[in-house]
Image (spheres, rainbow, N blue to C red):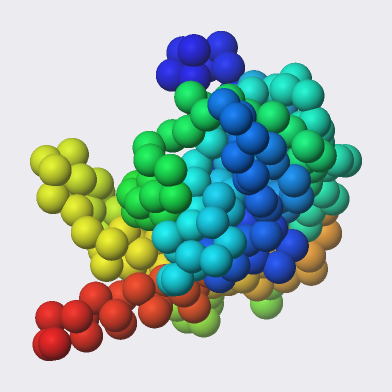
Length: 272
């Protein structure tokens, strides 16, 4: 039903004080007979208000060392007693994607709803994050293409000092920068995706491809606004939306800073 689109899914990892440091989550799952009772909340959950089924990560062993060994993944369905959603968040961008807080108050989840193994949820989490980063890297490509689709024609319609502004060398430089960033990102994304299709992918490149494409998308959106000048700064044109949407790719599914750590650690691991 998720694959067909009949149902909507969501992943619930982050909390108000556990974003990049996700293993410090506080949502508890206490075993009570054949059930686990969840108490706590999750935050910044994409599709939270609309999801029919959610993968929720909770602490089943608060004393585990390291803390990652005490996390379990649960399948939670809409309507389960004790599970509710708060009002959706008023975000800067990506406003077409609903995001909210999840609340668990003595929410009873059957033990059979454990995804994977008890207290081994971190393996489920990490295996999904690599693919999530790769899939998300396609979003910045679309945003950069949209910026070019609006900015390039504008530069060849708008006139200043007796000529189309696209003929000024500084504007030609903007066009070149936006185009080459898009093309470099597109090839990087396609190459990593092709490797993934063939069963060859790694955390380093999955982090690298979203790191690079996300930061390039933000810069391309800024350049697009600059190309349009004052028109780029008003909501009659879509450039502001492109920028607001692009910025999320530097935050969600691991921030740019975390992605750099993943890449650096991967290189360091080869020299142990």
